[in-house]
Amino acid sequence: MKRFLSVVLTLAMMLSLVVFAGSAAFAEEYDLSAYTSANIDWRKFEGTEIKVMFSEHWASEALIERIPEFEALTGITVKYESIPETDYRNKLLIEFNAGSNPPDVLMENYGFVKTDVRNGWAADLYPYINNPELTDPEFYDFEDFMVDAINYCEIGEALPGVPLNADRVIVMYRKDLFEEKGIAVPTTFDELYEAAVALNDPENNMSGFVSRMKRSNGSAHVWGTYLYSFGGEGIVENADGTVSCYYDTPEAIAAADYYAKILRDAGPQGAVNYGWLESLSEFQAGNAAIYVDNSSVMGQVEDPEVSSVVGKVGYAPMVSDGVHPSKVHINHWMLGLCEMGANKDAGWYFIQWATSKPVAHQIQYDNGNGARTSGWLDEAFIEKYGQDYVDASMGAPGTGERYIVPQVDEMLESMDSIDIGLHRIYSGEDAAEVMKTVQREHEEFLNIG
Image (cartoon, rainbow, N blue to C red; front, side, top):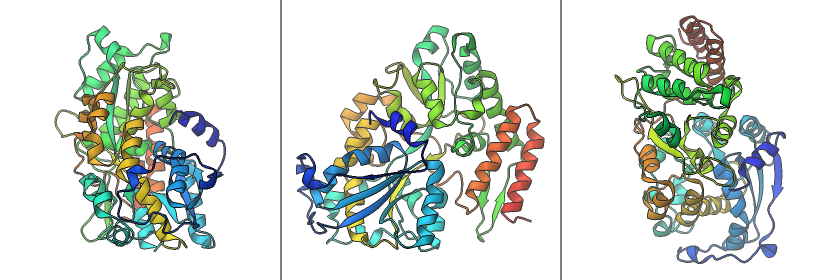
């Protein structure tokens, strides 16, 4: 994934990019021996063309680079789109509603997969996994997927997606700077703030802390870790199917005030414009001492071709307020089948290949993150990335929580309301008053009360 950052920067200027993968006839010869043990006919759908829709992500970029291998293995031609995350959902809805040329395979995420199941857009993958004519259970080893990842992806009794990654919010910090200042690895929010302020040195282009605050960039999800780790709650799904929300509680106010304060006092100038890419780039460039975000960026942090801090970074579990247990935001992008797709069986072959051990292990080794348990236990992987990273990710507190942000149709409205609220607090407005507005907005679009 050496080209990831340049690809993202290029693609971000476009609504989408359509790429036609080269046919297997013109592909290089690949070592396909890792797949020959599977008791299925990989050439069963030779000559079929499938359409795949990707949201831009390190996992999709890694798969795109390997598509010629899949084509050589199966004789299936893959036509794909890779779309910036901010535009992906709207593009997907256009495809669903038009119905004329829907994708066979698509990336799903928890924010909309429940809606896709309810609307009949997302197919249940269990019938494919349990079909011996399409899947070799010994080769695929479905039980190897992390338990919380499968729980996360399930909707009722259906499985609309197989997980690609296993993001957990963790603390990444510059070991060398901490050692120079004699600062211990923080375990509480107070310690995190004190370390960030102590290491903040804007005159020398060094921020003490960097994280997301940009609108429409998942900032609300990262902040959800702070909310729950302060003992608060956001949107809560009730047993009767209704929802409640708690964004004006003392815990929620404290979490919002803290997040804005640490970025205001120790973050880069213009922190409200920093999303995951800007934050990652700042940390890679050596311009930030602490970076809190999803663990999946670690592969880029430790990539010597794009990062200047390789070998200088330590990894630790997310902190808490010292009273409540820390609960982190977890996320799994998934590969699923569109129910309206014309070539679902061939599409399943793509998903089976993309999430099989040979592919998943290599992608995890290259990028530092994956959804298969065996990948995290691999000795070569641990040697490459370090036990502290494995422990911070696998032992991330609160991973038993299925969701920090529940699945509601109003997910985008919720995220935007929170993002705007955090921006207002960052600019100096009173946190309690702002969170009252956030609460009122949620009650309105969730029809509470």
